[in-house]
Amino acid sequence: MATTITDSQKPFSLDPYHVSEEFGFILPAPLMPLLNTQFLESHRELRLAHLALSVMTMGYVWQEGEDDTVKMLPRNLAIPYCEVSQRLGLPPILTHADAVLANWKKRDPQGLFDMENLELLVTLPGGDSVRGFFMVTLLVELAAVPAIKSIPLVINGVQCSDVETVTRALEEFSQAMQGMTDALKLMHDVSYVVPVYVKPEVFYGIMRIYLSGWKDNSSMPAGLVYEGVQAEPMEYSGGSAAQSSLLHCFDELLGVKHEAKSGAFLTRMRNYMPPSHKRLIQDISLQPSLRGFVQQQACEPLTASFQLCVTKLLALRSYHINVVSRFITVPAARARQLRNQGNISQEETVSRAPTALEETGTGGSGIMSFLKTVRDRTRDVSI
Picture (cartoon, rainbow, N blue to C red):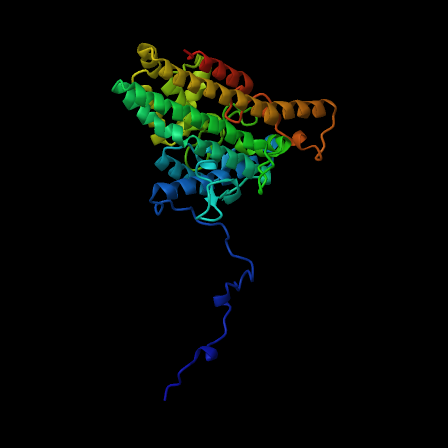
């Protein structure tokens, strides 16, 4: 008569415990296979994947600082990253669309969309300053929503010669830009339960390199090889406020025309936006001139509402220049002073900053001259 073997009577084996007879507790061949992107279906899934792969890439490239950057991104990261990027129409580098627009969640899903209830999905070195920097930028984007919603009203109103509708929409537009400036001021605000405070020395000395790219960057003059994708190095700019679609939309609506060098940089930054957002900017530019409509109507309330929009946009750009001075220009001067004195200390956070970015933005622009030129061209559309 056959004997039934119960579980307790089966021969004892190490197999169920993931213990190898050859390696013991060591995991055999720990390298993962190539990530398969075919199961990513929705736009939201692809954006989350792009965010995660972007942060891994920035960490890998810049982990040893500017003096020992890698020349090649390994294929296990490069291939899926480029596949996801191609499907989204985004470049394979960390962009504003990743770090800000797709990098948030609510602590309480039913709670408010505010600083106390928001946190990052993924972060970079820099502690609380990273959260403050990206969350404030996100709140600037949120403050702009009424302005974005007013754009179709303005365009349709111009097409129908509806002065009253255009005037009201421009009033909403200017109020939203004031809200954007107010939100940007939170970058240095410690009054919240969860402090927003972004320390300039941390932003400049620790965070900034991880937002840098491999185009117009003397630390990586040849760019980066994406192994398994292309044998030749590829060049991409780092994250930049110029990659936000907001001010591009506003400039096109108000008729701001930038000088050749600044305009070329801004146009190139549109390649770092989701294609649908880039298309919106282009389509706004093809509409009848709002400024021309305002001049033609010669209506005092309409002219005043248009001029207020220009004034608020100027104020926003002027405040942004102040922020850049506080977080880049002043720390850069301190870093140069320490370096000239031979006082490179780990205790001085700014002294860890990469020298290649002292005069430029992470997107590669000559930052202060660029911002001032853009601001001055904004003033030119005043009526």
